[in-house]
Length: 272
Image (cartoon, rainbow, N blue to C red):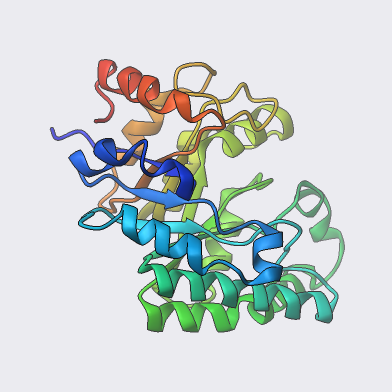
């Protein structure tokens, strides 16, 4: 069995340091320099795009960006804020187009409060879905035209099926699911969600992207692999059951943990 090839999330300034490692197997890459609100407000991102393209000259791997997310909830009930969210999504896709990126990570709108309370308000899920379509509908259409896949990442999600139904409601190949293993493990340990491998199985063939990070089930740690308590063998077993080949991205707070994480995964026979 061929082990899955694993890549990483990096800033533009970090690409040179990991260039040889990225290129040796054309690893999946996510560039995370373009979600800074100050950068988006100023619109002064072209120099970063130019530097990234220089560093990636000749790269054959799949790559994308983490889209805008700070304070941006697709399900905001305020129409003026939804309009702002839509503008930020358009900016993110403009960056993708300039960069040649083929994915953009976006954040789930579902909160812990939603999980415990939406059912107490008749029609609440339908209203939430309508708000999300208003915020994200134009972005999905633009992503289709640009060859970009929007990856909808779990944040506070307790029931992973909610996010899947929401993504499916667009009826588009341009929106798929992302799983952040540390977010899922936090939700499992602190809010009663299913374990991480259940999130993978729930996503099924809609899974297009995975943030790999270790955690303790209490907080969003972004530790190197092997430093937390995620059951990695079960996670990779679930991934191996899929026909889909999601982008596998180490998203670590300390980038010095990338190569030790890969050493751990290789020793365990889980990835390369």
